[in-house]
Image (cartoon, helix red, strand yellow):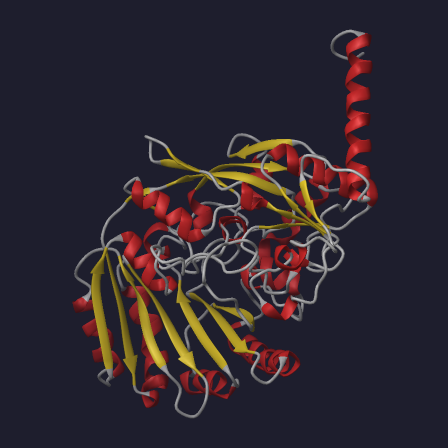
Length: 474
């Protein structure tokens, strides 16, 4: 039996068949549908296919779909299912392995889903295509804030789905910890709302299970916080102080109040740049920073502390201004002036104390053309809700970035050496938002104890492997 009369059923079937036929013709370039498709040969294709990283400019997606509604996403998934076409979602386009601009793929560009609605109860509904600085502006205008990343042009979708480590993480948790609900088009084409009470298994998976695995999210609802002033700071230490800093920083950071979140930044070479920067949720970071300097035993060569509004602090960390276009992408129709990236990266989690700071210092210094960051966790991250993010107990994440100055192949070789040396010190772990396509045992590395359940959920919602990709769960 079917709902309604036999006549209404037949009319619905005919309408559906007509839609699929129109979509098929559009895909073949013989007609159009209401989803804007940009294909090779179109004038807009050269820019539309670009992501953030320049090394993937040679990749050629089959088409880019500029979508403006969940229905558009559903149509794209219908095409991919029927034709066996690889499909990938793109928001900010910051995929480290270039998966969001993959060769031959239908790229579903969700940037058109860019609405931010801050509600009276302090929750915010955020479209899946919103970039971080645009989110920060909307929240600040409403007197609110929330934890997220520091790169202005990163998309909220990828950040949230992989976890979301940021400069207020110890105070407010990961970005995914603030998630109340999400709407997602699953591989069967159904637009679902997921939350703690609706499709709870999928809600668990979307908080740390990585982007691209379960469908295409169209919007999120986050809990936000009242905006407050933050103290941003940076302390530059002599290169010779690096081992001492690496020795004392973990204990100092772990014992600091949750309001204090810092990053240790280390360059490469014989005399690397050494810096501690970060954010204090409040107005008196000086005693804590003085204590760190005392423990290191070397005065900083430069020190800066500044009380700022939430939005000003986010601009400072992003190295851009919302008033001059420098926070907006210069690629893919972004209309801004922010430059693109040319580097590769990998990660490990700091899972135990640094017992050999000299060895860690040498790994950083000897990784050519690199900048290395240790981003503090703990605090609210460690107390976060049950979710797929598997690294709650980690002290910090370690990210190793290498420029392509010596060529991509050489950079990846050097990156692999650093990655494997870090694994010997801290174990085979990593952060899924810093995907490394050469990561050994990548699934266990990124997902840890969550892997088994994540695979079950991926098989449940995507049994036909519509969203398969090289480091995907299906």
